[in-house]
Image 1 (spheres, rainbow, N blue to C red):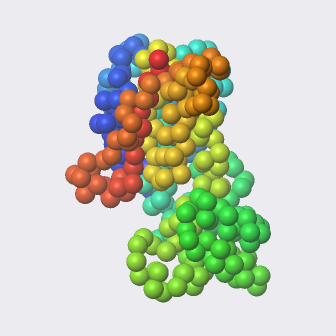
Image 2: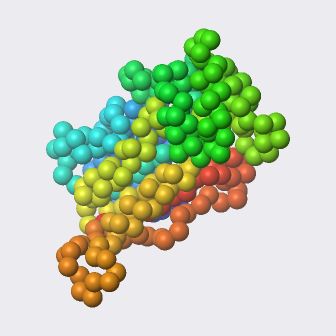
Length: 311
């Protein structure tokens, strides 16, 4: 299967990166290279693109796509949370911009064997990085009922979390749950028919929660943003696309914290902490996809772009 992915908020990202022809830019979630292609179009021969992805198939697809551009390129098979070490190992002190697209690629969703989708029957997997050994199967079959309920509620924001966890534990008592299809059937049994008739697919929230847990998607976010911010040149920009409220809340809060100088309690008449803001938020509210983009690519519907600039 070809690696296909429609880049979300493409023009908005490129505009907000303020790309300099000789700058150094990091695409921390390279995917199929759609955003990076636009970055390369604006870079001169001395400009450098650093493309990072934990999916080897994505890296190969992006390398092929970007081969014809004259700027310098560095492709890294790793997680963007390791960006500090990646830059250090490449003898790069500062960068001019970074882009993180936190969504699952269309390829990963549509490739049945990856086990991300509730629309295809496949082995329970959901690993972004195939080198990892921890899969969705371990979560579904090994987590106790309380912990299962917690991640479905916290990461999936599903009001039926406790009931879904109970049904999963009951089903796996007779035999292990092996496939996404089996899991979908259990979730459908757990959610009352009246609730299933409204809103998104009944398994959507649970699958989101398990995927987040498998790949530790939320655990790495705040530290990564703080480390990236330290590595930005003055006026360098960080652009982050999120797809659900948990991610967006983390990015919103860390941007707010890094753009606030004084952290003293409000009752203090004079600042005692000596704090210094290192970022400036470009917009208080997130940038959303246009109606046209949502019509052409329904998967962009929940996307939000937040942008900050190094002071």
